[in-house]
Length: 212
Image 1: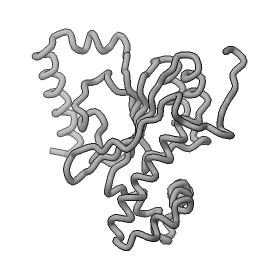
Image 2: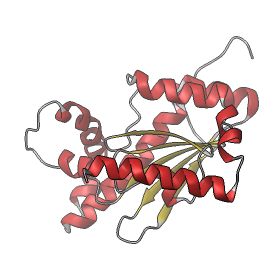
Image 3: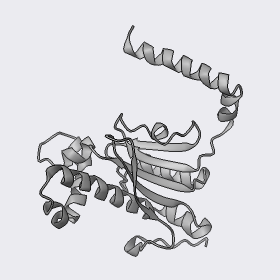
Image 4: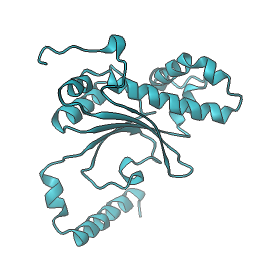
């Protein structure tokens, strides 16, 4: 059997199991989505957002890209953030990186990889900002893991710097922004930080809104 056909067969089995447990499951989820969480994670196939936190369909609004980056010119990501914050009224935004991230590892190498180097430049900027700390780490793997963490912290701060989040902060005191790292070798998540509206210095990135 072709591998893709196995996916279709698995889908049928999954749907049947859902109906067996809750006959109205798809009727309920088809009407609307009311997730409390927006997940911004890596595209890596080993880090499926819903599965690693044990959530059901409809509970997490998900966006994934290489190395879980939050780039202020990425209209795809910004559209997800705006929809999640303004329409879905999500309460938490989670930026989740993972140890062993190929994107972060590639950003640490001078090797030319083509177009992807343009994307990885954002991670190299994080390294540049923390050169003293990272270069002081003699062990290559420990330095790699630390850059994964620093990248998550940086991307979480980028979320806080968006106008959509700041507007919701000032009007409704939500959402909280979280920075997590998933360990593919243990299956566990490390909670790095939480950014709340009253405990983050936006500096030059602060917006003022005329409707407030």
